[in-house]
View 1 (cartoon, rainbow, N blue to C red):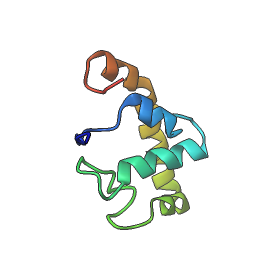
View 2 (spheres, rainbow, N blue to C red; view 1 turned 60 degrees about the horizontal axis):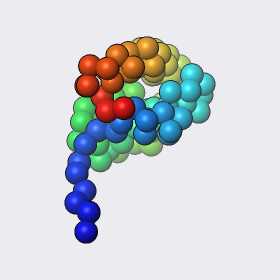
View 3 (cartoon, rainbow, N blue to C red; view 1 turned 180 degrees about the vertical axis):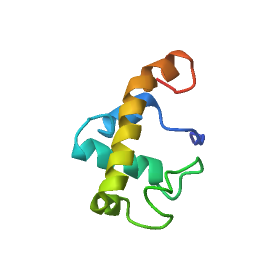
View 4 (cartoon, one colour; view 1 turned 90 degrees about the vertical axis):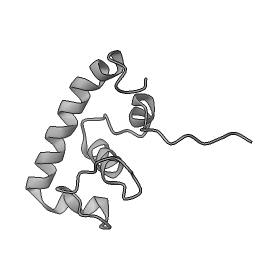
Length: 89
């Protein structure tokens, strides 16, 4: 039986989820990843409060803008994080 190791999502997994697409679907995907309530890493609780549906952020233009800015930064720095071995490829 293969042992399951808990670890952060890789760049490839995040990309495969569509979270790097700079459109509404990509933004929803990234927010779902960043706000998943079973995630043991820091979450974007300022965008989605604990135990709330991730898609509700879309009703608040300020939260959409904040999430979009974070997505833009992540898209820019993710390759550098992979290169620095801070994010799995």
